[in-house]
Image 1 (spheres, rainbow, N blue to C red):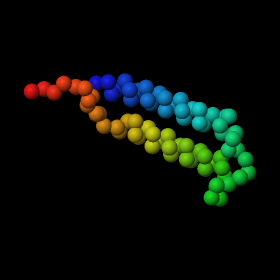
Image 2: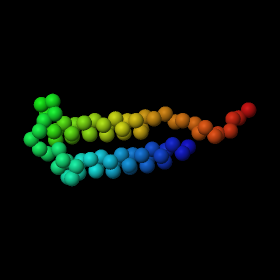
Image 3: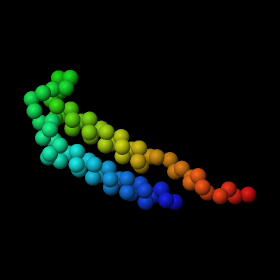
Image 4: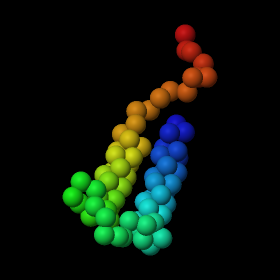
Length: 75
């Protein structure tokens, strides 16, 4: 019942998080000549954040509907 509006709000928040993480000031932090495991830092950062956002979106969308704990029991 209240689950659908929360899903929409969480999706909007995850969009804002993705927009922030893929925007210039944060990307500039990883744009250097260093590497992580032989992969340039910028490419590794982009891939890890992209995969994490997909995982977050899957968790938000596929989360089961939990009934409210304060719901009265029907006889």
